[in-house]
Image (cartoon, rainbow, N blue to C red; front, side):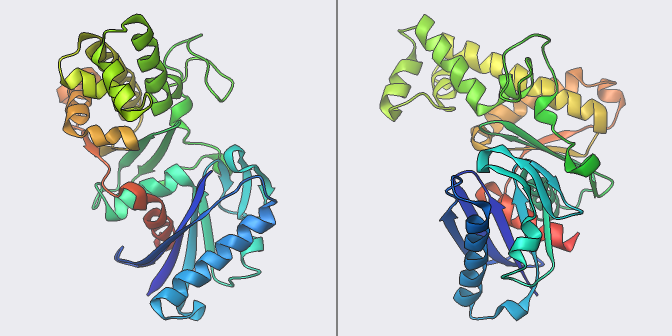
Length: 315
């Protein structure tokens, strides 16, 4: 059986033709171009669907269902995007509009929630019914699965772990609050912290790595820290504490089997995961008395969105 998984981002719309076992038969991406009217973007998604089907040599009739992961507040019951700021969508009836072109059962959800479903069914959390997924990117997205049920909150507006407060009156966040986890532990926050450290430590190896790459990135401080650079180690040590603080909060709330970490920063692998794991073991409520939670790197990477969208259909 074939399914279509769609991952809608601010810059790119990715699609895949996938079976119930997570095998990807075809992938394609098109530019989002969010300045356009939503009807044009949805028409592009329909065209992307048709292209995927043609590439494999089947027809739309062979598709069982379509799933979509979308950033923002998503009402999965009504098929409406309540609000998605980075694609300029507000109160968009995406399922109704898409079904004008592709008349198949269509399911939608928040992109981080969808990625969590994908990891739980096909990725690092396979076999578990209790998973928290965290993506460290421009912001922080979280997806939470408890006893096999995806927690979305009322009208799909919940599970926004990136906006839990870890410091009262702290750094400003893009959501309008101060002190959010996202304002300290996202890749954006790490880049800001790295730039601040470079300004104070012009002799740091971080300068060398930034010049080599042509910019300060989420890798800059980690590269310097691994080479023994003192300023780089201070940035990384502090950043890992910020990441771990939010992870510990999730563990205390949900006590999952796994906390899976994705996004570009997750490419630091064991250097990052093992240090977060130690803090979780030491500082989560009850410590060793309560069930152990394993911190792991999410493994689906750029395919998490399209695979998660198919997992939504199968759910």
